Every structure is written in structure tokens, then in C-alpha cells.
Length: 153
Image (cartoon, rainbow, N blue to C red; front, top):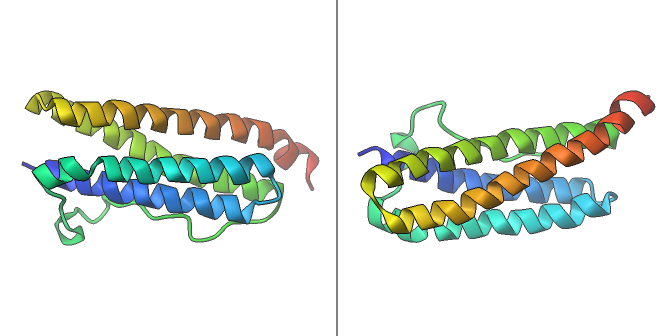
């Protein structure tokens, strides 16, 4: 069974996403909505990682040496400045959140195959919040794009 590989990926990706949301919050603290909401979303990601704990205890979590080379997610190491910097940072977080989202989907499929109601309950709650995170990121990028791409020079 290779479910532990994806549980490990998801667990580490949620932690990386939390770090990235915090990085963006601190790097763009002048944007009050970004600062506050990114901290809230980071806490959600940490709750998701914690919600996975009983599932990981049951199925295991693959170590990084068991993980295929390209199957990983890195947190945002630093933020950029200015309107375009905000747009690019949000876009980077969006890419990471998309990885988390599709990984929840794959784990849902495994849970259905295993008929594991506890796993499916965890996936249902957490994946819904991840979808909302993606929705906020898309909306915030749409809001930032005109200022960053047309007005700023």
C-alpha cells in the first residue's frame, strides 16, 4: 500500500502551506486583509495537519527517502516587495494550495477504496477549507492584478 507516501506528502504540504501563508502575511503586513487572513489560513493548515494524525497513526507516513524525488512541496522562502511582489507571492501560494487540494482528492479516492469512514470525514472537512483558501487566493489575485499590472510602473 502506497497511501503512506501520499499521507506524508499531504502532511508536509499542509505544514509548508501554513509557513507560506505566514511568510506572505509578514512580508505584506501593509495589506491588512492579507496580513490577518493569511494568519487565519495558516492556522487552518496546521489544524489540517493535526487532523491527519489519527490517519497517519493507522496507515503510517512515508519518510522523505521513501518519497519519489519530485513528490514534495517547499514553503515560500521569502516575499517580494510591491504590488507585483504581492501578486507573485499569492500566485506561489496558490500553486502550493493547488497541490494540497489535489492531494486531498487522491486521498479521498483511497479512503473510498478502503471504505474508511474516519479518513473520509477528515478529508471532507479539510478539503472543503482548502477549496475556500484557493477561492480567496484567486479573488485576491484578481483584485491585485489591475494595480500591479496596469497602474504600477
